[in-house]
Amino acid sequence: MSTELKKALYNISALVDLGQAITAEDAFQEKIQSALYVITGTFLANKGAILFYDKSTGRLNTLIQKGFDRAELDRVKPQDLISLGKNEPCLIGYDPVPAVAGAEILTPLWVRDEFIGVLLLSGKLNAGSYTLEELELISVIANQIAIVLNNHTLFTDLSDKLEENRRLYEEMRHIYHGTLQAFAAAIDAKDAYTQNHSHRVAKYSAAIARELGWNEHDIEGIYVAGYLHDVGKLAISNDLLNKATPFTPAEYEEIRKHSTLSHNITSKIKFPWKNVHDMVWHHHERLDGRGYPEALAEDSLSDGVRILTLADSFDAMTSQRPYRKRMDVQSAISELKKCLQSQFDNKIMLVFCRVLEKEITGELPEPDILPHLDSDSDLSIISSMLEAIIQELSAP
Ligand SMILES: [Fe+2]
Ligand SMILES: [Fe+2]
Image 1: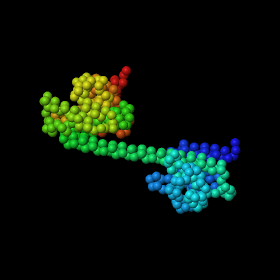
Image 2: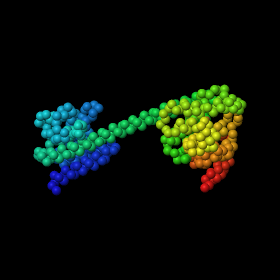
Image 3: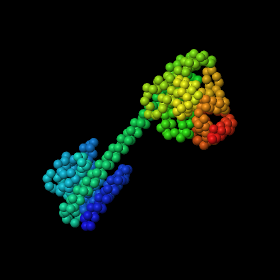
Image 4: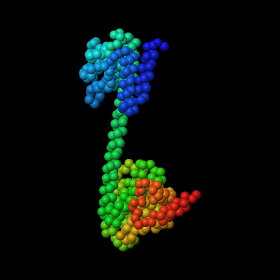
């Protein structure tokens, strides 16, 4: 193998390696610099530069250079290079090749019909001329550099787009959460007794879903459903919602409309999370099919619905209502347990008990349920109660 060919292979493999390594901007700059040093070293040129064409400004920017006067490089204009051959080395001083002080070879870099930049090399240190083989080799290298620069641009554009999408998504989430809080505040303002109910149901549901192993996106979905599940109450009269005596059958019928109203309101929103509509609509369904509004049973109830149902009922029981005092935590847990299979799901109950137990023992350092419970609760009694239920429900 001739020395020339060895040089060519060395150069090309170095540049192919460069093409594979264009991930981070720092690494790219470093690689492109070493590529220029390899090229100038191969041809014994004391000066070399790679200029990069910026489409947005229509200007050539110096990406890397060695030995040139920077002001001289700034004088190279893209329009002066258009008539020159693609990736063809041109000898400076021959019309129409523009003059650049200190440069002897100018090679416009192209990928297909896309102008990418310029490679400039000075004369040789030994004052010899470039041979025909060397010019051919420069052409091959120019092709490689053009591809690498083009790939880097595509990569950077893609990264910018991804960043933009991420920013837009964050913005959208921000708007969603703001809207949710506005809705929840509107419900609270209307129904003083259920203050923060939506917020707590959202928190409890998300905590159960997390313990169940849901991914962050789906957890956010059930959190949103928790916030919105009772939004239909906005369409129910204040007097009825705040009535201090038990509801008559007709009034109860009216109240029951709220889950469908919640669904009607939220169905206009195209959520980025799955099943929000289903969870909102069916948060008063029961496993035995005696719930409302559709009397769905067992297989028709998703895990999300089962979680929301339990979280909603637990908070309803442990909160003060106009027509009754709040239940203590132990009684509410007993009530949930009593209604397993008919109303609530065993698996969800087990997970709920596990979360609460972990919050009490400190295994979950950022509790979602515990801070909202009656501060007079005897946690050791609740803990042993939870342990017993966990044991019972975990048994095969
Ligand atoms: Fe409800
Ligand atoms: Fe509710």
